[in-house]
Length: 118
Image (tube, rainbow, N blue to C red; front, side, top):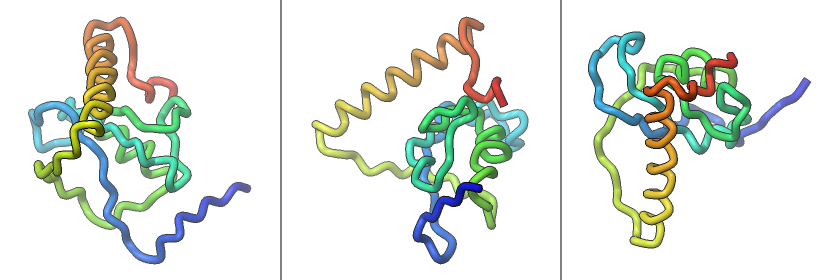
């Protein structure tokens, strides 16, 4: 048995990026994708075992995050982003480019989401 202790003693806000434009309030029909780089902090892994999650939002909430956390309430979406200093933005832009390239390959049928292995 493996135990992961986060050090949190009460509910904790969990921040992840939701990529894409919302097309439905029904998460099953919404094509947006979650990018969570902090998941290993609570002992989580992506659907393919990666140290991050890049999954459709419904898969992220019901299969990936649910393995390591309990969501007490529905998620609150926010469009507020705090811009980082330029040297950090360049790194962020590099991550965005990698994610967008991956999504283009998935959309073209040349690749699949990590969760295809769940």
